[in-house]
Amino acid sequence: MVNWSTFVRSLETDIDWQGDWLSGPALELEALLREVQVTSTAITECVDHLLQDDAAFNTFVDYSQYPRVLMDKFTVHVDQEDRFRVRLHRFWPRNMTGGVVEKVHYHKWHMSTVILSGSYVERRFVVEGLDEERKHAKVVETSAAELREGMSNSLPYRQPHQVVNESFEVPCLTLFVRGPSLQPNARIFNTEDETFYDTFSPRKQYRDALRSLRGLDGYFHPLFPKSVG
Image (cartoon, rainbow, N blue to C red; front, side):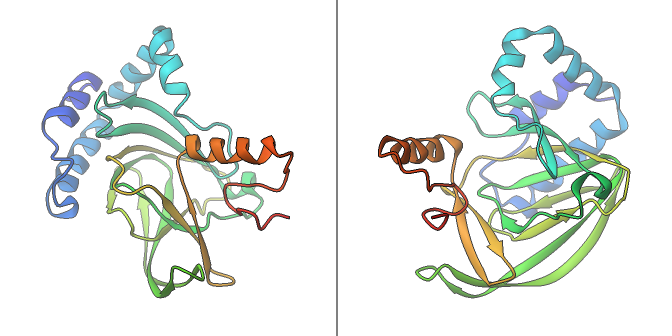
């Protein structure tokens, strides 16, 4: 039976974070995640530690994003060497999102996840006709799969996907692990007009915002640079 401490220790010592993700590390990580899902006390141990340890709580809250419109991110562990981060995710049901769905996107790191409760549908895409200079790209759906409680999943970096909780009233909770950043940016695709934009770390975006504010320029946004005005 795995507890939270042994889970984290396995992430530190057993996973090759620089390895060929889908052929090895992801399989091992998914097995660990499924063990944690079966052993519900591991999540309880993790949360109790954060609620009782102010130093840990104050550290991880800065890595979290809550509340959000579609999906909340609660960071519960950050590796000291920043090889990986562990999060709890809550995907809102449709009655709380007004029918809004996330845009197709890719990440700058590998990831693996397990469904703790509820379900969601993940769609994967390939990019066609990429034009970096014109910020033009067409994405074409290649697969769609429903993940339910106890099921695990992995995604390599730069793999476009979209996750939607299609339940009208049941949230989906997941335990999620991401690896180290392998490039500076993630990418968001606008399927309507076949364009894309890149997003960077909050620190860079905060610096960019301050530079605009310094010149009393209110037309800035991390998602739509200089197109807001």
